[in-house]
Image (tube, rainbow, N blue to C red; front, side):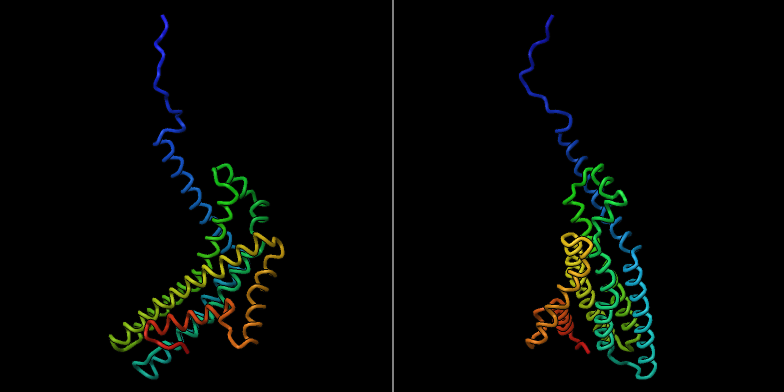
Length: 246
């Protein structure tokens, strides 16, 4: 006895909504894991370790200066000190991390089997490039924004008055935003340089940073370069928070 023909098409198991949702969730988890792995590999690179050490030294140095100023002058504004720390972190801490991100990370991932592992988990090469870029942005932002947030909290504690403490906290929020913008700009450019130029990625990254900066400075307006634009953003953010940058 034959079974009646089923006129209703049945979905393949792989096309059921719950299976698609599970697959998408698994891909999202894999992408988050790829970003976390990219960040860990950057932190373990020589440039990542140097940037983290520079961030720690700058934080300790400026924290000590804030304590000395508080003991000498009592209730005093530390906005200029915080602005100077922001500039130092953007160069001495963010620079080495960005250079590490620009040093042909795709080749290093292929050599260490990261690309094969990502492909086995359903992550395309393009998605892996995006994960590397996001990892570079987050790591650069981390060595700038977190120390600035900590220094701002310290400045608020040393303020001596509630009004000045609130001002330092507002200024600290502006500086943290500067750190995020620095991370997105420098980290994104570094990752793109490493992807496009390979082993010459660091040279390309430095050229994209320094050559326009020198030309813009000669033209009398450094804002047409990445360092100048970041400096202008820092000044704007500081003024928006009610504090000058020294």
